[in-house]
Structures are given as structure tokens and as C-alpha cells.
Length: 398
Image (tube, rainbow, N blue to C red; front, side, top):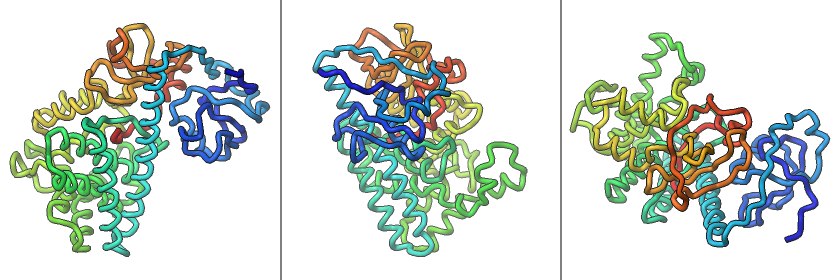
């Protein structure tokens, strides 16, 4: 293989103004050409989500003179056996596909939300198209997995949260062998569950902490706002309306707005409530990883959700859900990217403690296991950049 004439550059050093070449074939990325002139932050995020540790610098080296040299990622040339190399390419392609499908789903959700008042029939069509797309992706694999995806934002939006909640609820429902009509209702309700927040002022909706009593009460009205909006359109089923109205109800009766308890809460509502509760934990300042969020459910939400459903969530997420930073038994650290059937052997993006030698790994093919979860704050600067430890976490079907 001929040696490239271009200098390798860590994806963590990408910036606007550079022109780079992707070390991928044209079928393995969403850009028109392999050589890309970077003109926006969105392009940088798309390149980072391709799963490659480096690109080749074509021009703009002078822009890097003030960059931190330790951010450079040196990738060792390792000859992989052909089957393993093919497997890595296949999984990377699947992860890119999940990421692209997640963005498509978010865009469709935004379109649907924009039509709810002005064109309710159009909104119903958009919702149906979105849900059928997600169901097709769910049934594309006999055992659907959950992949780590991101919108590129560090704050959860109504659409991003809705798609992630729908994904979790769908995969749990599939695991419980619910039929397609049930899953269709669950997905529709999950995508729309927070639509009532559009009636809540943004400064209240996005406030991280310190809400006043009046603000908390107003925010807690969003299920009613959403129900009234969809009910007024006359276009959505009672089952979907009930998911939107009751997605904050808990099995022990401590939820709102009606304090429903036990079997008075349908299974569809319980699945969306649990998925919503878990995904919401991921955006709290005091929750540092999906693994801690899962532990939080066990420790602090006992009785609020059926224990069997929490166990189902653990089965589909694994003990170390995608997005969790972990310590491996070989001394390296990694970020979980994709769930597997063996919970301590997920598929990961690993590096040294300093952040070097990044590679995608199938732990099920190695004599290596996950030993423990690590707080992102405990990582070195280089490892944090390599693993993109501060990126927002969402899930999509793979």
C-alpha cells in the first residue's frame, strides 16, 4: 500500500478553515467527496461521528500552530486479520447508519411538531412515517441493539429526547414480545410525549436548577398541555393521548398529573415512563454516566417502576450502557459504543490512559472484560478528548 503524502491529524484537532481527507472509501461516509473543506462546526461533528481516530491534513496547517501538541493522536499501523478488519468496518458502518438515522428521525420529529397546530393532518402523516421508519429499523435485525448516538449538542432538546425515549421503549417492548400495533402506539406516544413543553417558556424549560415553586408547577403542567393540543386536533388515538398525559405517572402512585397507581397504568405508559425517567437522568449535572443513571434507578426509584421492567431495561442496555466510560482488564480505558449479549464484553472505542492508540474493539473476541465504570472527570485531558467524554448521550436502534 502506498504511503499517503498527507500528515495525519487527530479528529480532536479539527477546526474551521482546514481541508482534510477522510481515510475511508466514498461508500463509508455521508460527504460528496473524501476531501472536505471544513466550514462549519456541524461538519466537524459529523467527521467525529464517523468512528475514525484521524484524518489526513490537506491544507491549513498554519491554523494549527497554536494548537496543543498533546492533542495530536498518533495511530499505530496494526495489521488486522482480514475477518477482524471486515467486522470492524461492518460495525463502524452500522454505527454511522444509526447516527444518520437518528438525525433523520430528529428532523422528521421537528417537522411533525411544526405542523401540529397549522396542519394536524400533515402532522399525523409525519408521525406515521417517522414511526414506521423506526419500526422498520427495529425489525431489520432479529436482536436489535442500542447504539450510542449524539445530536452534537450538550443540552437535550424535545425532539432529541423524544427519539431517544421512543428508541428505549421500542427495544424494551420488542424484548417483551409486544406485537407491532402495540409498538406503533408506544413509539408514537413516546415521540410526542413532551410536546406540551412547547407551551412552557424556554427560560423555564431549559433552566438547569433552582426552579421556583411556581415554575415547577407550570412545568408540571406540560403533560396536560400536550394532551389538550393533541386532543384538539382529533387526529390521535386515545392510547397515544394517554401516553402523552400520563408519561410522568409512577407505579407506586407518586407521579402526576393524576397519581395513577399499579395496574391502572397501562404497560405502554409504564414503558414510556421508565424510558423517559432514565433518559432524563442522563442530562442531570449530578449524573456522570449512563451506568450511574441506571444505578440511580435501582437505588432511588425503587417501587416507582415495576422491578421486572427495570430488569428489562438492564437487559437491553447492559450493565455498562452505551456512552459509559470504562476501565478494561488490560489496563486501557474505553467508551462503550454498542450493546452485546454478554454484558461485560461490549463493543468499545478504547485508548491508553493518556489518550493514545485509539481503536475499535470487540471484547467478545478478546480475553478482556470491563472491570468498572469511570467518571469522565477522572480521565486525563488526552483521554477525555479521544473518547469525547463530554458529548451528549442518546440511543438509537442498531
